Length: 116
Image (cartoon, rainbow, N blue to C red; front, top):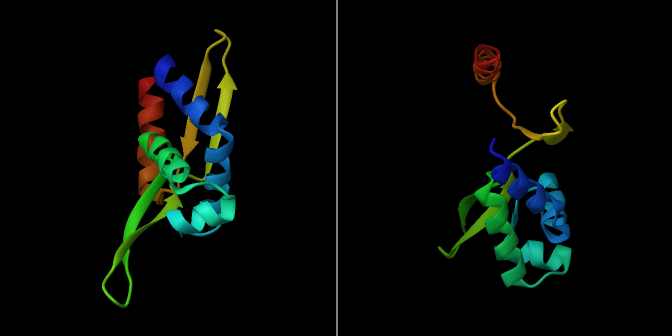
């Protein structure tokens, strides 16, 4: 991950509103309106933070349809944990751990071992 990308991810998860949204959707998927009410934020603020989180693939959305045919999006967390480390060269590394199935984890491990 490039230094610029690492800084952007750190800035995003360092944002208080973004963290509140992540905490809310980590418990269960929610709509923007539900997030605004629960986190006591305006809808524009929720949408801006969701956009920031989507840029770094930290949230996903899916479309739901109401009984009367109206559509709306719900947002959910797209990762299990994030780990920030400082290596021996005084460089930060950010790892985002996602819930993968076993073959995906093996492939990821193999790629990491092959690149070292």
